[in-house]
Amino acid sequence: LRLVVARLDGRSADELRLLAHKIVAEGPAVALLASDEGGVARLVFARSSGESLVAVDCGALLRAACEAVEGRGGGKPDFAQGGGPNASGIDAALAAAKAMVC
Image (spheres, one colour):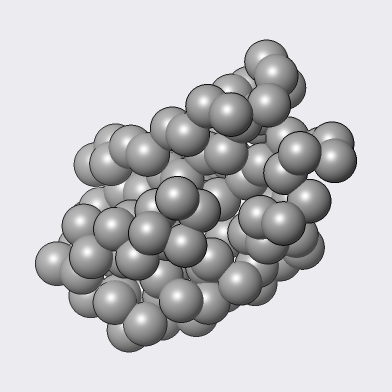
């Protein structure tokens, strides 16, 4: 399992989505990506399909992470996105999601 956790400030949600899909397409991986886009937190979480990652629920990860950015979001077990107005909480959001995966 490859776990990619990255903060890419200035990137749009579309850019984060594209990158997340590329990461998980390359093999067993979980991508936890975030960006401070003009003071707004953007979060995109994705995982590869397959039996080894079925326990990783990106929707649940995102719900936990969104608390730190005072926002919301949603998605499916293999892909979720969201954000919130508190960009200063991005690092805490990523840490919370990473702790749930590891």
